[in-house]
Image (cartoon, rainbow, N blue to C red; front, side):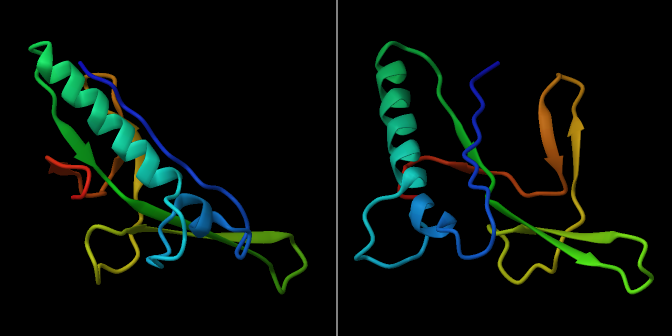
Length: 121
């Protein structure tokens, strides 16, 4: 039971994904899509708590980097994909897979999931 959501920025290197999401770490950059979405989710969670609903938040934070390169054999392109778990600093690239669990929930297997209690977390 519950509500699940994904916030995704897609585009080539240098296209403004970090700026749009608001994850550059620069204080001069206005609040991005990620900060606004998290704030809205926690505000809604507080409204539900006031109605007696149990509310929990779990987060994962990943970067998926895809590098397409032409092969030296002239047989097309190769695709190297790296999935980085950004909540586990220093962890090497991860070969995660998308799976559906026994409850029908779609998960990125191999990525950490953390329970948080505030939007700031």
